[in-house]
Image 1 (cartoon, rainbow, N blue to C red):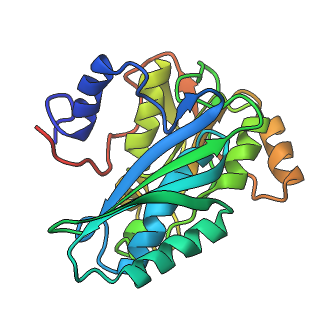
Image 2: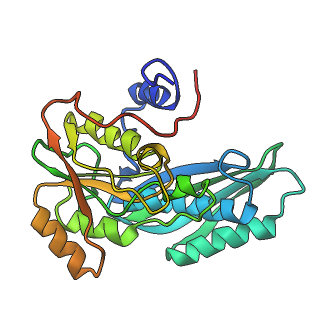
Image 3: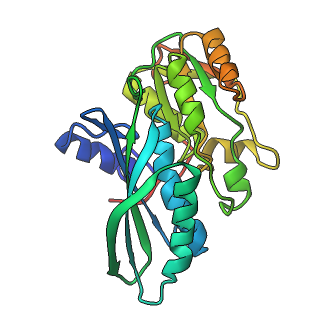
Length: 269
């Protein structure tokens, strides 16, 4: 799909002209991080408990990509009367407990198809990391290998990199995003927001995955970030007891230089 003429990201660009505050993984409002995401049965999976988990983790990952931590969740469920709410909310509760955040409200309504919509409130101990701060000469890092979700047929439960996001922020990250749609697509968002290009040295591929899946599979929820000081990044992650992220590229002035825009995109006219 040509994202310049149609599709999800072209639609978002049109909406951003109407609502200029749109643009990052989270909105930053009065010191809080706000985000929302939805999963749909049949689009994002079929196992109802896994859908509940994924609905929470997708939002937690958005907070992680800003260098923040999740605090509160609002969960709205729309679905057929036959929906097994107990199983669905077991998945929601397991994810909320795993990431130390609390469900504080939401809504229930009937609908032909199950849709779980989660809104999240997070906080940040310092300045949140936006997509727009990357500069020429900054190194590009990723917190782990990519493509495992696609290799599993998107059946594995995703994990959000909250501690890694904090470490990246403390290490001076200039831009950051989570790999939800694919490395090519998501790194392109940083390029667009920061007006830079990227010379990609290599693509870190998870065991059992292909490079194509690593570039465009999506739903890995690893973090991709830019930072000027690789040594400071290594020190911050080591001090936090985390795996040191791999340097995979460098930001360049040529804005046309970037990996292929491979990755998931919902269809919109």
